[in-house]
Length: 166
Image 1 (cartoon, rainbow, N blue to C red):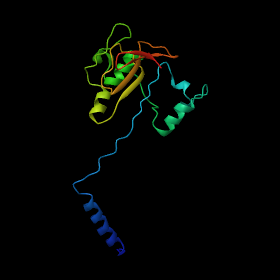
Image 2 (cartoon, one colour):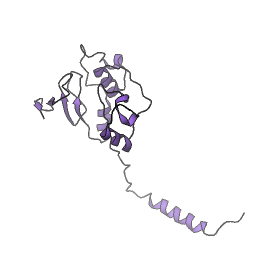
Image 3 (cartoon, rainbow, N blue to C red):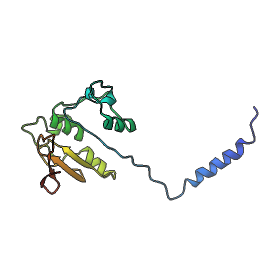
Image 4 (cartoon, one colour):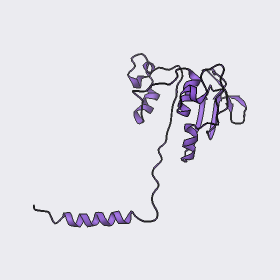
C-alpha cells in the first residue's frame, strides 16, 4: 500500500493541535437560547408554518423557520391550566396535583423546567397566561394575566403583585 508523505506532517500537526486543547482553560460549552411559545386555544390548523391554508401567521412562521416546530407531539391533559402544569413539571396531572381549571391551585414547590433551567445558568421569564391560580415560581421575571385573562388589552399581575395594564 502506497502512502503519501504529505499525510505524516498533517498527522503531527493534528496531534499538536489536540495537545494545545488540553490546556487548563477550557472553553465552556455554548448555551443556546430557548424561546418556548405556548399558545392557548390555537390549533396547528391555524398556523401557516404547519401548512394551514386558512390563515397566514408570518411572525410565527419566521420563528419556526429559525428554530424547531413539533410535528409529532401529544398532550397529557388538554385543559388549559392542567396542560401547563404537565409541561412545567413533566408529570401527569394526577402526579403534579393540578387536575382541573376550577378547584386546583398549582404547587410551586415541586420541581419544574424553569427551575432546572435556572440551575443550568439560564434566565427564565413568563409573560402572558399562567392560569394556575398560584403565583409563578422558578422565573427570574414574570407578568401574568389574572385567571383566564382577557385576550385584548389585558391586565397583568407583576412580580410586585401589582395589577397593571400595558
